Amino acid sequence: MREPKKHLSFSALSRALSKHFENLPDKRQAAKTDYSLHDIFMSAFAMMYFQDTSLLAFQRRMQDSLQQNNLKSFFAVESIPKDTQLRTVIDQLPTEQLKPLFPKILSALQRGKQLEKYQSLGDHYLVALDGSQYFSSDSIQCPACLTKKSKNGDLRYHHQILQAAIIKPGLKQVIPLSPEGIQNSDGQKNRIVKSMLPKERFK
Ligand SMILES: [Zn+2]
Image (cartoon, rainbow, N blue to C red; front, side, top):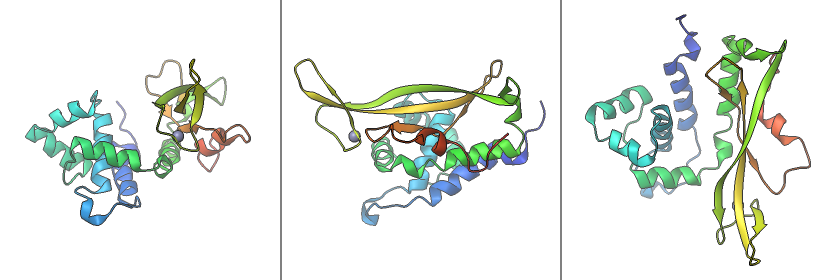
């Protein structure tokens, strides 16, 4: 296997995430915080990286001292957050704060000439789109909620997300672009394409 470019190695990408999480604005009251935002978000990244099926599975993994050491050394996590804290804190951070990571990583792939192999039909990119619902309630709502009337006339509130990914037949890896919330205010402008792509155009 060819050596991947240095800035695309796991440790370089992990460091980029770590740096971004260190600078997240923390609006929590200092006295009530047991874990830094950095440790919480890096733990969530580790959970995705290990492909644990749930937070509980991740917490079980972390009961093992070797795995704990891995989290500390490879993900720069100082203290490992508890299940409930992880969930609550992540839920409260606006997803907008995480979006800059997507174009950053896409640009790194572009610089490392990794995007070229994803070109199809000449110099085009194939982008697959999928929508998914991640929240539904008949009591909790916000101004951006999508609404649906049930048979008995009650309103139900939803949040949905549109996820795009660059794909290439024959390549197992896909490159996810920044997800976009499907909200009430959508539909006037072509917001999706604009916010998901990096600033400089890629060829
Ligand atoms: Zn809402």
